[in-house]
Length: 138
Image (cartoon, rainbow, N blue to C red):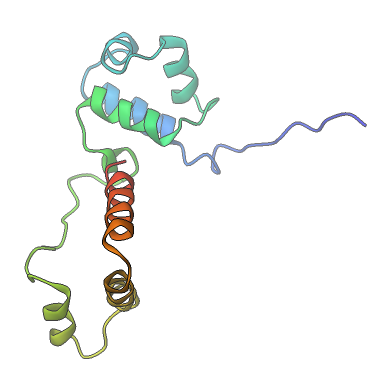
């Protein structure tokens, strides 16, 4: 039985390549500039921009660095920047819980996580936090 070719449509590929090309052109950069800045081959950059290849998240981070834009800009289709909430307004989770009548699902999850982490040993807690930092740094 012959292998079937996997069909991919441009709409399913999120069009990350079009966004990269648009930002590159807006900044007046050539594919060669991106090649030097990101350490990728120009033919690969072309394949990404034309939707023939979908880059990994690590590669998208390299594109963002070469374009000198925050990572979210490669995924955010609008103009301008995205405002982020002031996450440091409250000092700890308990203060946030006190202020809200009905905490959102994420807050309930964090409260349960805090309770669980209080019950594990110090070595396991350190390992978990190191893992979380590594994930957050990606």
